Amino acid sequence: MDRTTGTWWSATAGEQAAAVRSGGASAAEIVESQLARIAEVDPAVNAVTQLLADRARETAAELDRQRSRGEDPGPLAGACFTVKESIAIEGVPTTHGASHFANAVAAADAPPVARLRAAGAIPIAHSNMPTLTLAGMHTRSELFGDTANPWDPGRTPGGSSGGDAAAVACGMAGLGLGNDAGGSVRIPASFCGVAALKPTYGRFAADHRMGPEDPPFGAQVCVVDGPIARSVADLRLAFEALAGADPADPRAVPVPLRGAPLEHPVRVAVVADPGGRGVHPEVRRAVDRAADALRDAGYAVEEVADVPRLEEALAAYGSMLMTEFAPSWPVVKTLLGEGGHRYIEMSTAKEGPVDAAEYQRLTGVHLSLRRAWARFLDEYPLVLGPVFTEPPVPPGLESRDEAGHERVSTAMRLCSATSFVGVPAVAVPTGLAAGLPTGVQLIGRPYREDVCLDAAAAVEERLGVLTPTSPAA
Image 1: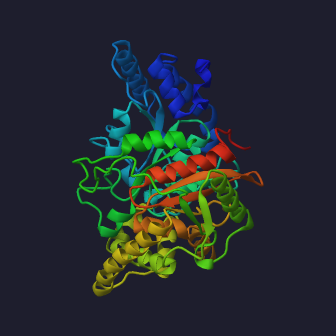
Image 2: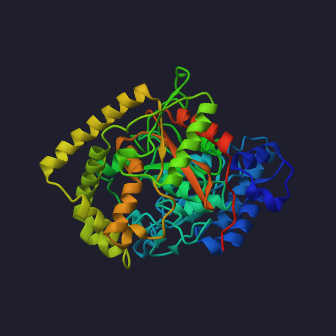
Image 3: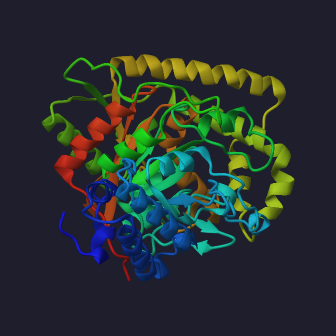
């Protein structure tokens, strides 16, 4: 690829890595281009929180030395990535966006950061998120303020991995590393016009401790780390680097990257309005566009009534997580900053804590729901549906009042349910409507991220890539 040093930021992560591996560019050139792009556009977006410029330059220099010695610099050599403020980078504070953790320097890289480094990728910055991931869906933190949607500052970039999505959309990095417990990589990807992968529970090693203790059961099974990228091909590269067993996380399993071939044509269940609660016409059109793209690619696409037991999944998801969270709330509330408590308190009022007997019953419901989804996905290996059943909403809508909270939690319902049952999903853009990105998600069988990525690539091939973009005024 013939590029000047200053324009490497607009290349995909795969293109950057291919250039470094072939000698078409140095890792140092890639880093300098990314740093210049951050300096140019981040003042308008506020996605980057802690810039790691000197460390990125040192890493790039070492990668260039490796290549000069004839060593393999890795499949992602020189590609830069941002890291959500809740995921540890060795030697850098993991602040979670809260002043309480402003000096909480990480002793080691979190497993996914270490994996991406081992593949040759370079962490270039931490990225913004809602305070402690609890202050709402909008990316606003006590320490770093608001991140803007690069397409329209009057709309949220989503969250909780909104800093990563906005940074990737604007070309500040080729990849972002976030996490998802109910849409937190998929929603910001959809709102910012990029792609994201929520992996199966157990596919990637992770460490979500905020102290010496591991999180309780619900948080263990719902929260997964996942990449954000401008292209599905880059998502696949990140997926291949991140997957695999790791002694740092006993949940991570050694499942092959690609499963057995499926019977063709692969059946796709379209669920445009999960639960029948309503879907915005533009979102409905986005689902229809993706369905047409898949038909054109040879998939057997069929609209179905609904996904399995959606309302039951949403109720169990809310009750289990709020029950686990209740004992720590009096302390956590004090760490959220002004107004940061509103979202969780409205969530608790909706699906409050339950007693021990009910919580125990819900652990069985969790398995029952997974079984129902397994049977559904046995018939339909893919589900096509919305990420969010509305276009991007105004910043902080979910924390303003009960009506706003209900509107947002309803719109993200398919993300919440799929996080609870632990299945993989890829969010992929489908175009623009009224100047704002639209997108869908493709949900698959456990450990069949390859099937989701293949389908997302088919959609992308037919509907195009939206980014990089520059911030709207």
